[in-house]
Image (cartoon, rainbow, N blue to C red; front, side, top):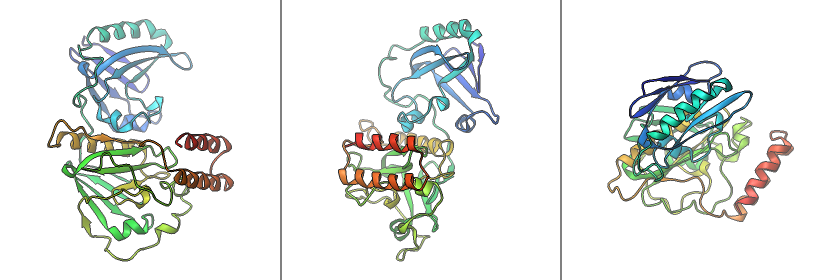
Length: 332
């Protein structure tokens, strides 16, 4: 097509076999968009195209990717808010006719497998090397290895004793990313052979808002003894994996200002793409896990108790408390 359609925060350039999405840089542009800068989306990666009314006199043109086509969305696992969806182009309502034209043009170019999940990633992942600061450590990825270097001010005793960690992507089967905008955000690596193993029973839940609020890391953050902080360990089988991400040496946890979406999600997507590409057997897809089945009732009760403490301390609003409690109860 060779045309350009400029919207709010992004511009779409239509090519013969793909759409190049260029994101604006500016104070009002979502930070995730600024981090991504631009993305080329092949027509073969799309399943459909929609045009719907937006807010405040706008319309939204959205290219819907096929499941499994984009490592960024696979890592996000449905946790992105609409405003951070890189496949949405928001336009003034007076441009609806033009948007409909381009929507029809894109629909006409969808591939024969548009209704089927993609067998491989068709959209490029963010490029390594990259790093970000989590609440309890610094995560870095050079394209072949992921390293976690713990902070003594945030890491739990379990992590401090285990020492700094290094995980070759060839020893991993996938990655779990829980949005830092949740109460218990984290990035957890899944060692090969444990992709179907849910985290084992433990004394509580992932590190929550108390850490995110910066009021202290709790009893598990005192300086431990044993392995030196500079020791490096390869991925080792864990049976079972720790329930709490703040106790798992294969995970880093997020907090307020630590591990934000625009830093941790592209990181997770890059790791996931590398894991998938370097798997020895193409028949075994990389795992992207957000939660597995029903949760341990004792775990849920502990999380609700912790949530209540945050509520009484004024760190969580009434609405947030009610919504999160309902979400936790639904996991039973």
